[in-house]
Length: 344
Image (cartoon, rainbow, N blue to C red; front, top):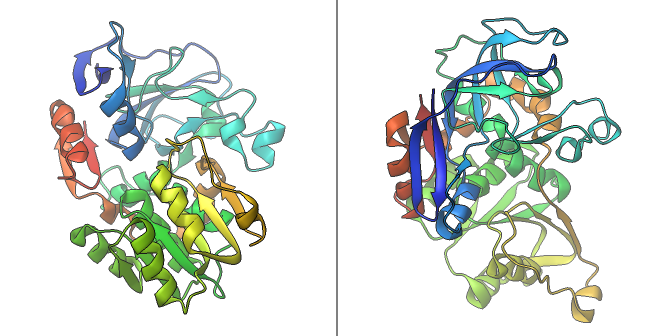
C-alpha cells in the first residue's frame, strides 16, 4: 500500500510500504477513505532532523473495516468508522475517567510499528475501544465533518470544555487555524454569546464569524491584549481558548483573561515557560487544558454533526489525492491552505 513518510524538515514522501495485517486478536484492519494533515504535523515538518528510516505520518482518519481480530466485537467488514487520534482500550481506569490519551494500554498512530493515518490502510490496535461506528454511507457528504471528530473539532471542544464555557461566559479564542475555528464553533455550541477571535487572516476570520465569532481582533501581543481589553470594558473574558501553542499565544492568553477566569490551552505547546508569577497569582487565574481525549467526546458531538446542526468540516479548504500529500504539506506550511483533506 501507499503511505506518507517524513524523513526530515520539509521532506515528505509517499512510498510503498507493507500492507497491514492482524497481529493481535484485538486488532482491526481499516481501509482509509479520508484522512488529513494536522497543524501539529507542521511542527516536525519545520524542524525534524534528517532520518534514514523516517516516520509514518497522520493521526486523523476514517474508513471502512476490512477485517477484525477474534476478540473484536461490535464491528464487521463494511462498517464505516472514525478513529480518534490516539488508540485506546477504552476500559482502563484512565479511559473510564474520560482520559483516553493516558490509556494504560494505548498509543499513537505511526509509532512502535503502528500505521499512520495518512495511508491507504491502517492496522488499528485495541479496535473495539478505539473505533466509533458511523451510521452513514462511505460516500456521505458528511464525511469531512465526521473526520473532524478524529481530532480537530474535538480539540477545539476540549479547549471550550476545560475552560468552562457556558451561556454566561465571554470567550476569547487565540488563533485562526483549524483548531481555533473549531474552538469558536464549540464555544458557540456551548452557548457563549460573545466570542472574540484573535486572528489576522481574513478568509479564516470570516469563517470564524460564520461559526459564531462576534468580534475579530487582528493585533497580536500587547496591542492585541489592549484591543480585547477595550472590547470588554477593561476586564478581559471569562474564558480564553489558546489554540496556537507558542509563547506569544500563552502570554496573550494571560493578558486577556478576566480575573478569576480560565485558560483552556490546546495548542501543541512549543514553549516551556508559563508566566504565572505573583501578579498572576493575585488574579486567581486557572490554566488548564492539554491534549484532547477525542474518544471521550465523539458520541456527544456526533448527533449534531449527523443532524447538520454544526459543520466543522468547513475547515477543510483543500482536497487532494494521495500522491499530492507533499504539496499539501507545503500549502499548509505556506499558509496557502487552512486544512487539507486527503482522499486516498
